[in-house]
Amino acid sequence: MSLDELASKYVNSAEEVLTKVTISGNPLSVNVESVKKVVDCAKDYLEDARYYMEKKKFEVSLTSVAYCEGLLDALRMLGAVGFEWPKKARKKRSAK
Image 1 (cartoon, one colour):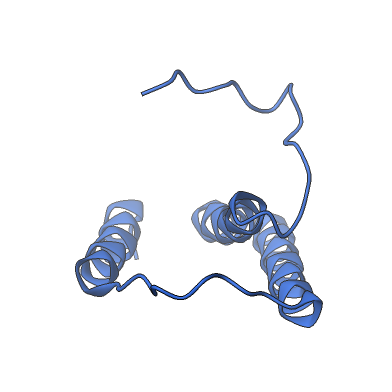
Image 2 (cartoon, one colour):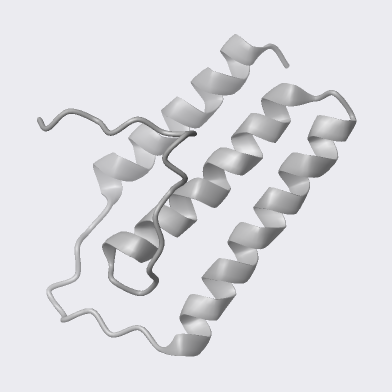
């Protein structure tokens, strides 16, 4: 699958989900075990990213690490974990 096709596949999938997503009116309650499961999933995606990098399948590696980062960012935004991305690797986005 080409990078163009891969990107289109993931963009289309995300677009479809975002048209159907519903936001619960219930207050958010997350237990520690659930957070640990999501962190473990993020670790698995990172392991996948390393594996595919070694196999020189860089597009799959990038996709895997993007999933890892997305899970970690979501947990941080929900206040379930605390961390900061390394300063050298990331630039702050300008305020919208």
